[in-house]
Length: 350
Image 1 (cartoon, rainbow, N blue to C red):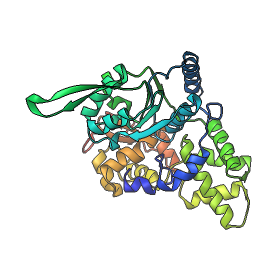
Image 2: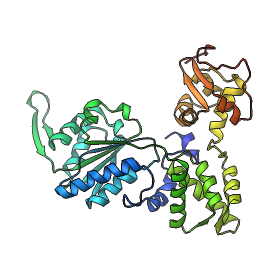
Image 3: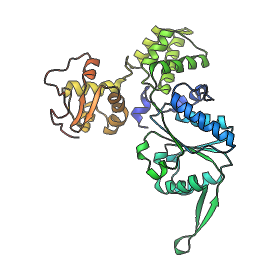
Image 4: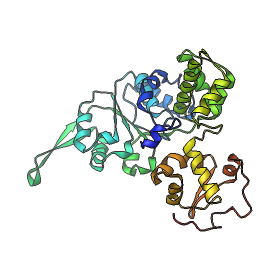
């Protein structure tokens, strides 16, 4: 996570300050899990069948943007199957030996949750193929021509992989998962239900109007919704109130610079630069990044996905352009000479 993203209240990534509270707010069963109805029903069938067979469930791949519940679902799987869970991540596995050590220490039926599985090193991926399919790994003893591969049998386990970039997974790895689920962003009503549940767990009284206001600025992500809820709670407590009202919500979100559509300072800076300095584009990514004083990677991976997904900006072969919705959000009317097609005006760079 970049330093800039870590500072943003609307980042969907988990931060250190969130860990304890997020763990307390996480649902423990599928029945308590709000949203993702299609995925939840599919997993329920898969687990019910595994329990009837009295065998570990098939390997499961969970994909989707951060903050939507992939880790929570992995923990629920272990709870529903009444089995232990081992948690690690792709970046923590630096070579195949690290993964072999984890796999060889698993017990029968245990769940191995591998977050950011797309960041596994290639040798570890190849080791995982055999472990997932045949439940064994080959341990290499010695070096050079005298090296010997000793097969090590593994207990039957369930691998639960999570990724925000499923397209980066090689096909041989993707194909070895028995079930693949993609988590979608939540709608307004689902986020409101998440907030009501979280407020109850935190012992907060909250108005329906306040719930709706926070939900509308949560970018369809439960983790962001819970974080905004805690910031509204902070303001209410500072002002000596124990009841979260619409006024508390509006003031708190204004303090943290989250507008009524969920855009924060960085999002608005990018959109403003695109419209005010480049007449709506098209403009190249690096030029746009220089205009807002940010790294190219920050603009591309932190601000741009939300702006594009919500129709404020579009990516084209000739550069980035502001959409009519983007102009309207800043209270501006697109001029007649502004580009309406991605072929109207060349960009300075890609």
